[in-house]
Image (cartoon, rainbow over all chains, first blue to last red; front, side, top):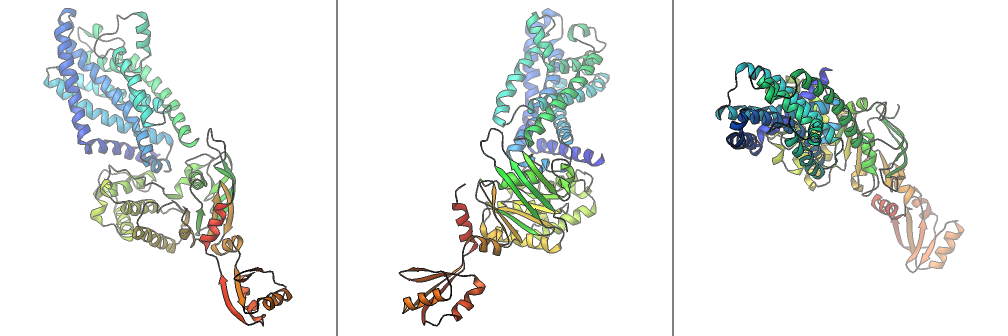
Length: 260
Length: 313
């Protein structure tokens, strides 16, 4: 057990090291949230925010936070394919550790990488004038961790059906971009047409974003307006989906690796 | 002593493939020996080694490595193996030592620590010793693998594969892409590893000269075993030794050979007599006709090997 834990931690550490040693990626990590929250949030606020009576700046900030964590963790998992193409995965796959340890280590690593990005978002949001109180932050951190794990499991599910980096590059925007709009990252999704509403309910990112919002807006006057479901509901659903995604994804991935 | 590797009727057919990549292969490997799986590109060597090292499931057949079935108990098998892959499988983002550390933790040898100096003294000692054996300095061990040459990467892979003291060390065409000096270096280190005892070396190669020193050679072609044994038995099996004789009076020589009960072939340059190497002296002593020429032919393994590869599937 200790051995598996150690092994998982090492694999996670490797991912964090990789981020810290890649200057380009580090810069991108901090520039993207700036663009999203600063420009998009600002322009949305000036166009729609005042009329709706809701602070769209906070809304977009929490949306981007949830979306970034979810997406970063999910896409990070796909680097397992990159490893396979670089032959490094051979080294990991012949190690005497459980395949679940490999996947969990990967999820933990990419989750940590996503959390580093979250720090960037929080810092920029603060600079741009979003007020974040200590209790809000304390509530958000566990939610952020949960979203990372959930995003990672979603990545594993996708990984189980993809063989090459090229396929991953093609498939990922296709499954991520619609979720961007269906999950209510930028604008509320509670007053949509039935068809879009159904699609929205099917997109996992919706629950991740809503969970982050739930912890941020908790106790605020505009909570009912911004948040769709309660924190326990989102957390419960995400836990169930986490297990389902992980088991299906890992089983399929291992099959792909060994049953060629 | 029971074999360290036992392969029985191993078959692998890849999905959507029309032919078996490995087609009913059987062999055993004795503990502490040097075993070479030899064959041209596409013979099924990498497929076989992938199954033996648990990264590929066989279609049928039995494979037992270090007492454990590769399908039933892959983790137990993995613990006993060290592997040097065809293409270096190092993480280029990490330093050389970090690659070794990652490996050591994955094999459960040491607890994970984020820095080298925090790792247990036993680990640091072992890394230093192994690095010294292959000729990597501690400064080099701290460098990013990205900056390493092909030869240095191979050296690092040796250090890494030996850190958990494997009972079987698999090398899958390890000299591909290495210059002659690095190549010779690799064999020297392997010699040292074997001299320490306790490690079986399993090599796949398409270079004949690399296999020639093996205790046992298994030649694979089109997924099947075409010959197996020591370099000597393979030579004996595959290519005939002969002596070419000539005399001023060829007819007399021919008559004498016939009288001695020897088969021969006659052409414009003399008579060719198939003969075992040990038997040449007896043959010559039995001939009275004055000879003008004697040429013995003992084929190299290279010749034997090429002959096998030319055979149709």
